[in-house]
Length: 145
View 1 (cartoon, rainbow, N blue to C red):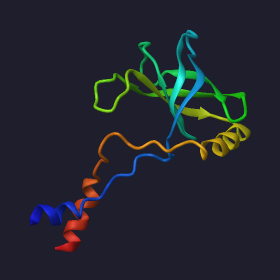
View 2 (view 1 turned 90 degrees about the horizontal axis):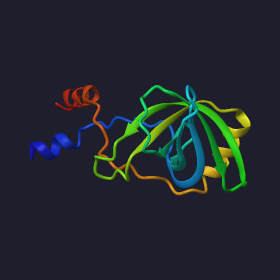
View 3 (view 1 turned 120 degrees about the vertical axis):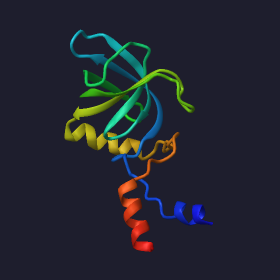
């Protein structure tokens, strides 16, 4: 009984600022320091970044140059970013090795075209359970008591 009551009081932590969309579009992600090609296929895409299939060893924080083909316009857009996450393909739901890129600089026109095109692509569901904001949960439980 207590467990059911407590679980209804848990506060989820919203981590994503942008909706992610399932894609499979052509891209080119190049590491800036040595121009090594990191990947050519975006697995998911948002206004804030993208996940790119990649087997190349890379470190978080490395700066990258990104070119994305917008299939709805048949044109390419450029942006700069950095490696925010390296996926090793070990978690349930991972589809192999990949690199998460967070966009640093993307011009207004590119962002507008990206926003317009993304609304026609399917939303991607989160593969892992949402994190819990324990401080907010404790506050909610103390207020309920």
